[in-house]
Image (spheres, rainbow, N blue to C red):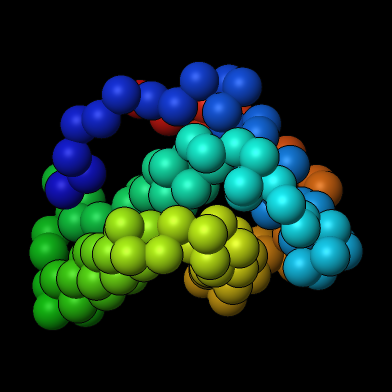
Length: 132
């Protein structure tokens, strides 16, 4: 089940997606210095990651749970826990690592990931902003 949280503001969502897109398009050089200039960025990226991963991996109250759904739920929890620990332990390297995790998860797990890029992120951004 997805825990209740205060949603990110539209500005925070936009900042996070801008960072992830810059990394995806330009690599590490395109994001150099951004995390240091924005001390909240790691938190915002972590929250965005939760908003992307939980709806895909969390147990759904509308369907009958099975072994696979419990395993998927736990994989999502483990990934988010590891990213949280990384953020606490090394904030300066957490931002690009979390952004790479968003890219990898979106490309490899979310259906229609061939739309990944500007169009895919636009749909994902809309889904995050409209989430309850």
